[in-house]
Amino acid sequence: MLAACGRDQPRALRPPPGAATGSVRIHEPARLTSIETGELDALGRPARVACATCHTLRTPAQLPTTVDELDEFHQGLRFAHGDLSCASCHVAGDQRSLRLADGSAIDMRDAMSLCRQCHGPQHRDYERGSHGGMTGHWDLSVGDRTRNHCVDCHDPHVPAFQPTLPVLPPRDHGLTREPSRRNH
Image (cartoon, rainbow, N blue to C red; front, top):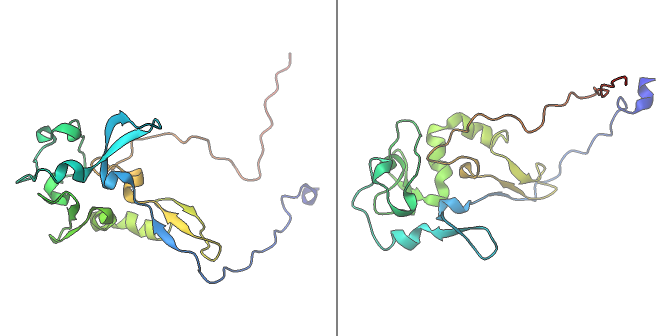
């Protein structure tokens, strides 16, 4: 009887993947090089302004030591990233760069290199495909893959996710529940 339902029928094996012809790209989120203005653009999307728009007009002598010292677009910024300060990651006078632990500067778009210095287990899981998410194909012989960047999911200034509930409850494979029926 069980074989008739089709669930226990063997599935045809897929052939092994062919040569990887697809490419892997890391998404570059807009928040790496721009900030929301609080306004909407002509299409109703949040309007953004490039960081360089303001930061090339003035060069701070030093970075703020607390969020209370921030002004204009950065007012109201929350910061909860361990014992770090602005200078732990940012370079004074060069807002297009980040500072690695050894003091060397990297381009803002390479922020993942900065993140992985302290978040090794997450980076390891990212490299293995179990952290970070993606679109496209696991099997690169079928097509391309685009991986998420750390800041696609995490605010670099407050990276921890707030506790949440799953959108849908997990489903048990092979088990179905009959809806309860009330006798009227």
